[in-house]
Amino acid sequence: MSGTQREPLPSLNALRTFEATVRCRSMTKAAEELCVTHGAVSRQIKALEAAMGLTLLTRFSRHVEPTPEGLRLAEGLATAFGMVASAVERVQPGPLTLSCSSSITMCWLLPRVSGFYKKNPGIELTLDLNYDRVTFVRFNITVAIRISTIEPPPEAVIHQLGAEWIGPVCAPEYADRAPDWSGMTLLSTKTRPGAWTDWLAASGKQPATLSASRQFDHFYLVVQAAACGLGVAVVPRMLALAELQSGRLVAPLGFVPGSRRLSLWIASRSSARQDVKALEHWLLEEMGNL
Image (cartoon, helix red, strand yellow):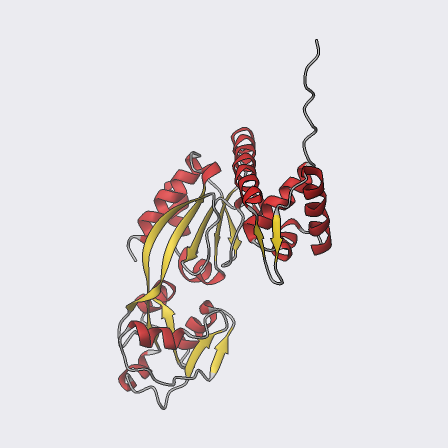
């Protein structure tokens, strides 16, 4: 019996490289995700375009954009790779991995995680300390806590957790000097150097030049610095809860909802797993009390 022979499919590696490039809108970012060189990504995509006889990407100096044909291909590949990941997940579930920043981990999660284990004996939780963009499959991430300035992956199931409340905190001996910050040491973080400006805007106060004189790498460090009497810092309330409850910190002007919002991302391929549902329920319950 004779029939029309189907043309062989393009290289799976080339297809995976192309999907990552379109999703990242950058060959450089795709190369970082795939742990290859920029040149390797470029060669794979050129080979794919040659094999298909189509131009799939429009190249710009700092980013790429898919052509209409490229976009249709990338969308189909994203769906297909998601189905593959889901199939593997059903047969061989990966670890339950929660991704959140080191500050959320140190200041908020670790003081509470024993409650999760008490409610869910037998479930082991792995932590990924990251506050940037994630790819669930690439980094084996199951659940992530992020702020709204970070773009979620397309395959994320998203729960909005509300506004991030922010405000200045300090050791008790500083409290009677608020709100006159002129003679006080202002603290900030490298991860959010504009925290003081954000707070002024969110609280409706007149714009002012508030320049931090001491800067720390992360919020969990600046929280401890403020508690030790090194100055005053604007921080998210959730990161200062333990110190506020213990009395090591006070918030003389309270907290206001900032421009950023918190959200919970869940990998769609894993959303039906019982351990994922248990973590999702616990996080939503705990964060609903903030």
